[in-house]
Length: 367
Image 1 (cartoon, rainbow, N blue to C red):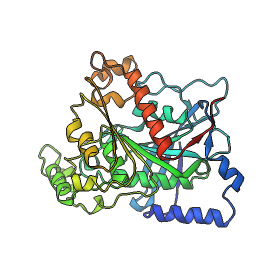
Image 2 (cartoon, helix red, strand yellow):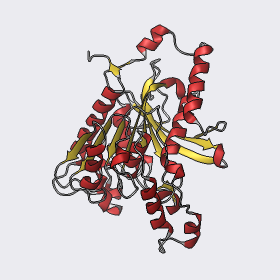
Image 3 (cartoon, rainbow, N blue to C red):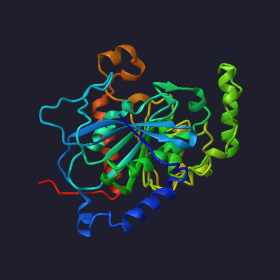
């Protein structure tokens, strides 16, 4: 794991603009001929690498920002795929060299569900990375499988889109990874609370009064330990204006709780980028009618994809190995007749076609 400490960057959009301007003025940007080539990715699938990155947010006392980066790679011929815990049917080469094709690649940021982590969706990252994308699978601070608190999962949920923006800035400024990223081809995807996060980043807004109501519900929940409730602030100000202009398209998987978090019809109409919403018809965690379908009704020109049959909320997780199926049957075992392998193929292809179209990704024609 590589830790990177950068200067204070509370204004990620402005800093990224300064960085781009500096690069142009100093002659660090590729020549016109190379810039044209950067727009065209190879048609054949890439091998896929993965690595863990940790950045630092100095504005909050050195708060760590962790992510799993999945990317087109050039692994050694004898290298074996890395085993993701409780997952199967993945082909990721740990810390493999990034592909040296001289191109800038599209970037997709991924926001996991409440209490989850980026590795749970490694299959999604592999699908996109095998077609030339870099995919940053974020581990949200104090809101992930390994380090979770209701303070962040149920109160400071506005930290999620803010951290995605910080991570974009860090990746673009990273000397190792920035040169491989096209800053004009950035999208966001997410599942559940992460799907909600993707809408927030795309410009949708929460109603401040409804968001305060959500926060008060947890602040007054006697089942939450008192020391945590004492740290919970009832404040909608940090939840305003979380749009990141660098993000050009959003792919939201079973987003929610849209109404519960305070995103109403007017707020959804503020969505400023192309949006694809996908959900299982049998989802009881974020029921389609109150979440994805509700959002699609009010987001301008949104695409809605409802997976028919008893397809549940966890269909977007990795395929599980036997250990996973034994210990987490509710997440790993689908309803009879539901084929996670085939549905992952559908979801992955939908995401690839959506991002290719909306981020204007060009590819070589197959030979």
